[in-house]
Image (cartoon, rainbow, N blue to C red; front, side, top):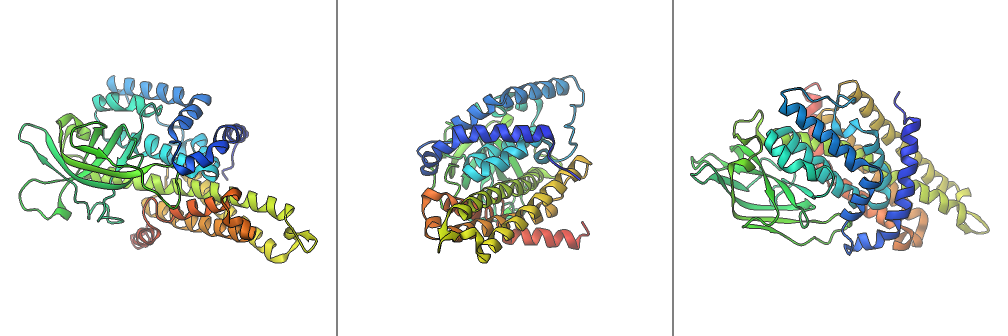
Length: 410
């Protein structure tokens, strides 16, 4: 059975100390958008040497690829989301304090980097990855559109057409893009318009990398959101953006599974990550609730002595154990070379996000009127937790993925 090692727990304690010193004092600024999350993220990476480790690992991988050698795999042997204990602990610990901060980091260093790594040529990896893996540059992963929602691939309307000189012209719009307003490097999915009358739903999906400042690219201002407010989210507009062929990942239109394959791999990673984020929110909501139940008195006694309050705390513990066990089972399976399927990741996301939202809302209820006040932080947890039921694909679409997986015998 998987458990955090002594080393993992040391890392966790060090992260908690960093968060208490460098993040909690700035939560109000992060929540209002007055302070973008990126400088704090960079400071954290530097403090723990993660930026240097990422840089050295990337250099080794690129050197091995250049020499025609097979890059050494992570000891986990499975999903990159589950391969690093430190990355998972970071997700859990940060989610309960600033979910948006860890969300922004995950999209930049997770989805954006992994897509370029898995689909890019050696030259493309050398061009974009060195500054992304250290967060010197901020990455965005642009697939969602105003009219597509959960039908991200089928409903996609952003198109590219060949320009006759080996390049492409990109036209369309993306929305709800994490890091969109501030991204330096943007991975964009678009449908290829070959001018042959093929229905847009059936067209090939290609994946390109754009840089901020390109002519025709507009990065909209950050939206005002219900939760995850420390994560800048916005729209991207493509008004006939000229793309040279070296911006097409893989530099070929004929890739196994097409651009949709890397998108689905990204969905799997995102949904597993939601379980870790959910656990973080549950942990923090429970911690705050226990402290409050011990200190708040009514009718001459601590409210923790009232049975209904005890029921809330007990149900929080059941949710915590269930989500942690789900995450630990996935880690163990991944390290045995059997990472979760998309259907399994969807089941994790469906359950854990629902559990986190219920726990956070019960924390607000336990605090009573104080719970509705921003000062006590549980209202922030409730707002953030709700976003996990929508983020990375709404929970309704997760039901479909889980059921289809069962019917296929996965």
